[in-house]
Image (cartoon, rainbow, N blue to C red; front, side, top):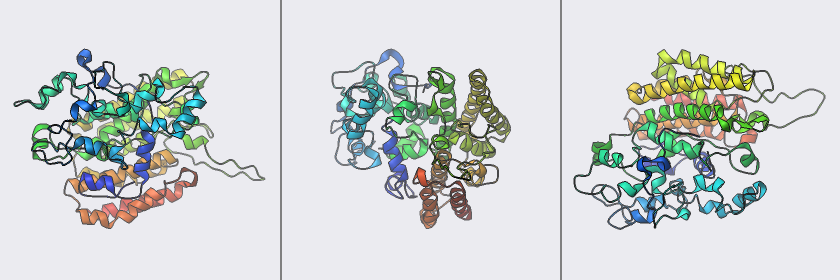
Length: 462
């Protein structure tokens, strides 16, 4: 996906291309409810469009030489062939062959006009200004919030970030606010066009995956300089990663417990682990066992498991940063998996309980429960005896690789590990990425071995 680097620019540019490929896949996505959403901003403020931000004295310069902000943010948003420009390409993707095939299969008509697609391939806007264009893709206001209430004042002398937030700007420096916005499309929401169900994936849509700090770094069009720190504080990569895991669990369970949880007489398979069903089938004299028992899922053999990729990583984080809550979370997680084998009613009740436990962990992490020196311990937990045996399926394993790479980057950012030392173990991290590069060739034991090697290499840097 990427290589390790000391700053966000190098982070976007390096490494094996798994993360970039996954990002492009995600931007074909749709998706669950949130606490703070751009289209639900106070007062129904209008979305004014990308063109309203594009002046050369604003964010439309060709050089990042502004005194306060770079002022070339739009150029970076439009980077033509890198993950950093993926949001600007989101609408254009709808004109491609794959998108048209998906729309034809589902009877959606033109995908560039289909509400089922535009909820995430364009900025979802209830109130649109004269310069708003759906074809701009995922524009500035999709993340920063509708600018009608603050575009004329946010650059004025004496303007403050707090004032901008009060006028409708989304405080993306807060991990829970950012996660809520990102998850709307990078996992799902209950709004129209923001949920990629199993039917859409069966028609050809890529699998949904997300990691808050990693994807944030690839979409960072700003510099965290002294001015940024004064106004908003420094971004804590470790905290963003942990809060993102917690909120992804909460979002998944909240959606599953609601109307999105069923498809006719069947459960909505979007919530389940894809590879647990999509494995090769063999017919021969002796069986070929293609699955492993998972110690975190007390379910009958052969039953499709709920996708627990974020639950696994959240448990690892909680063991280090919230030991007082990990017992509750793990117990609720096991109870939820067991309830799925009972009936829908039991599963919904267990989902609500587990979502509350995940929310408590997210609140604990966001309120200061994460410290930079915890990153080493979390990496050790991820590859340790309590967590690693749970990496029996592809989706959880991909999330684990993204986690150790993100945590390594947080060590570099906090000064615990030098850029050179991190680069020195890049080969070990890349081998873990290679073990999840192709779902059809994924082998759990081989992956756990590669993950363990990468974790030991990181631990040796301490």
